[in-house]
Length: 246
Image (tube, rainbow, N blue to C red):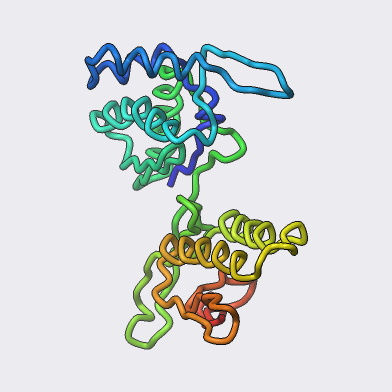
């Protein structure tokens, strides 16, 4: 497996290449002019306006669409190559290969294609992972994936890909819950805080594939997520760390 993340993707996409990618499907000059104006608008940093010839606004509602419009060129170029199967979600990507030699060639090919778009892999988050029982897994996207062996007598001869929320995703969830329930919001009605928290928890349940969302009858309607999975700990069987908690 080649695991990578495009370095500062939203801030680094060259405007010229981005407009070229959009013009492949959009011919309406009014729309193209509007996109150009959006890209040239710049961002406020420290009270001053900064304009650049690259990048889309981080967090902007149109930025993911513009990012995919540009990176779709990567997807098309890869389909014509024989370097494994590329799976991309926005600026996160993995390449599934059969051998390490193929994975090394895939990483070289991926780096070259990104350079043609004015982008590059994030060095700290780019690596080749051997997906096998007892080996480390990989994160994509928001989940940690690892090959494990079946835990029942009938499945002990089988291996399968287990997954659970990644450390980064779970830490983000903890930080968001602390923010929603922070001391700065003590003067708000508890029902308002519960409503905000429930909205976030339902989103996590949907994103993490949690099937049970329980409504508490005696805690101001605060929902509970039942059936979450903890990742395995060192020197302990991964299945032994799975538990139902509220």
